[in-house]
Length: 212
Image 1 (cartoon, rainbow, N blue to C red):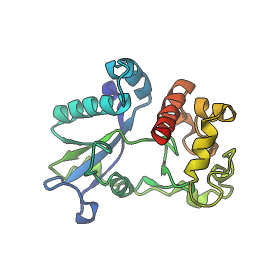
Image 2: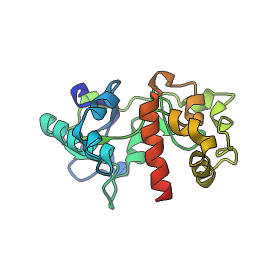
Image 3: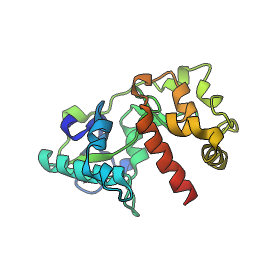
Image 4: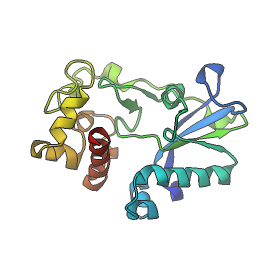
């Protein structure tokens, strides 16, 4: 998978409550590998100037990988209808809602995003769910809740307008260029924190989506 810039975020055996498409018995969740950003940045999609480069790249590489391993590709975009990615994420036993609402991974912390998933027709032993401990349950200080310069998480619900208004101004240049300070504050997964070009790409895409 690494040659495609992808890595497993966990897997599970499908049960009725997972709402998977008919005939799918095992699912592997996919995110970027350690060098996934570099693979994407060198791709045609990243350089052609067309909209949604990351989604278009994900569509291509996940579909190619699925063909290679005999799986069905699924994506968290392109709907409706949408596949229940958050339900599937919870089924891995390694991903949960965090104290700030966004998903947190047992190893990657808040630095993860779903690029796709592979669905297999067989129940694969290597895709059993792994039960891990939710990091937020043992984090006493929860620095993520207070790291935002405009207190977007202080009320227990993500204040999207406050966040967007901040990163759209010069005062929010650091957040826009370096990445969300709440994510950076989390002690889990700091090795996965993005370099400025990657952080700026994602934050810029988020800002455009919220202001267009």
